[in-house]
Length: 117
Length: 112
Image (cartoon, rainbow over all chains, first blue to last red; front, top):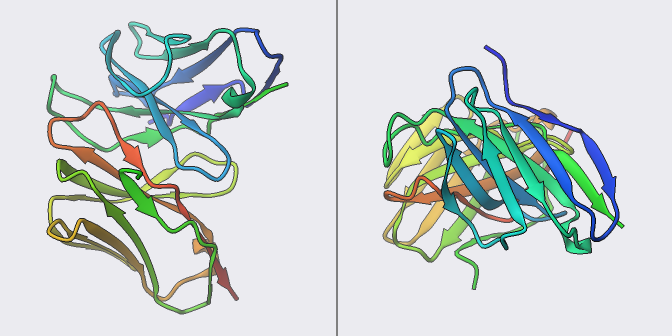
C-alpha cells in the first residue's frame, strides 16, 4: 500500500504568477482534501474532492481551484499569487463510501512548501 | 474567537513525564475529534480518533472528550524524546465530512 505523495517538495514563485501542486492519494482512497498551513499555525481547509467533484470548500477565494482525476489523484491551482500564499500546502486522502458517510480518517502527504516573493 | 483554541506552547517536559495536551472549542456541532502529530517539515500523522464523548486509549496515548465542557485532551504517558513534535487537535461536525477544523498546534519537547 503506497502512501500519499505530493510534488514538488519546494517551490518559489513571484507575486502574480500561477502555480499547480500535485497529489497522489493513498491506494484505494477516493477522496482528497487540500489544506494550507502557515508557519506556526494549524492546517486550514481549502476544499475537498470526491469522485472528481468539489465537495466542500473553506474560506478561500476563487483563485484557489482544484481538480481530481479518475485515478483519484488531484491538483491544486492558485492564480495571481500573493505574498500571504506562502505556506505549506498539504493534501490528505481518505476512503469515503458515499456522500455523508465513510471514514473520517485522513492520511496526509509530506506537503509542498510554497514561497512567494 | 477561533472555533478551536489550543495553547501553542512550547511545552518542555523531562523524559518519562506524563504530558497533557488540551483544546477547547466553541462549535457544539463538532462530533468527531482527532489528534495529529506533526514532526518538523512533515505532514500531520493521525494519532487518535474519537467519536463524541468518552475516553480512548492506545498504548501510551489516551484521548478524552468532554462535550459538555467543549474540552478535549490527549495524555502521553512515559514520554520519550521521540515524542517531541507539534500536536494538533482537529474536529469535524456531524454530517460535515467536508471540513476539518484544526487547532494551532502545541509544540512539545521531551528532554532526555
